[in-house]
Amino acid sequence: MPNPYARLMCRWEKHLASRDTDRVVRPFEWGLDWMGLEELDGEDPRGRVLELTRSWVADSDAFFSYERPRDYHLKGSHLTFTSPVATPYPENNVVHAEWLPAPRDRGRAVVVLPQWNAGPDGHIGVGKLLNRFGISALRMSLAYHDYRKPAETRRADYHVSSNIGRTIHAGRQSVIDARACLDWLEERGYERLGILGTSLGSCIAFITAAHDTRVRAGVFNHVSMYFGDVVWTGLSTQHVRQGFGDAITQDELRDYWAVISPASYLERLKGRDMESLLIWARHDTTFLPVYSKQLIERFRALGLRHRAVALPCGHYTTGQFPFNIIDGLTMCRFLEKWL
Image (cartoon, rainbow, N blue to C red; front, side, top):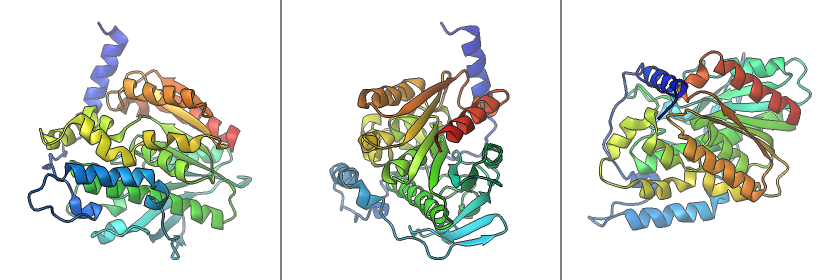
């Protein structure tokens, strides 16, 4: 029987989640075109999709490879450049980031990736808090978010949806765009680089760090082993789960989306001189604690350098007082120490 505090957190989480009334249940699609596969003339695509996604995991360096952008443009504090990954949506093909430099940063800078459906002001406060700790911040908009959102959508549905291929493509694009942000910081002379991501941004940040050795410290705010498990079981993605219907199982989705899951790249951190902060919430209704604990246990088993912190709240409530203050200070103090 949950204790009174746990029941309070559960009610608070559901209340905060219910404020969003524009969620759309979209039909299940394989999204074969997003994966470079042709229609299979009635053939069940499961085997082909699994074979392809496993090959991407096996050669993830190639999957997340890209050509550096050449058109960075900083106007005031707003940075734009062309994404190395092309999509059918012109808005989404331009990356937007907000540059928040600290006066005396000693060559320390962090790429900041907000949560799913964050608006253009999402995590600007985190960037300003980092500035108080002497760290510059580059806050990037994920694919299909705010400025990058196609006119036909009200939410960032094209980043996470019941379309298998498009969700993989969006994850790859956000990882590559984040690496391109690291390129920009490097070109400006920054050598002590970190990355900070929350929720969906945490997943993207982890995969970025796993494939980019320039990252010295990573903050992963809400963690899980597999992307598919979070989408299948989380409160904030119930409408996505509904879209899958009975077309596939949770186990199948875990396999298809392994290519955009932290679990697939943990081994890449072995021997790395990189510190990781793994933050989870004891009453999380979106990143269920069982999945967060799996990741932390795997970090320990592999002997990876990390610190794990449990917040006494849920997913949505992490953004509420006083938990947002606890979370923000924990992240900034960690980066101040290790950058």
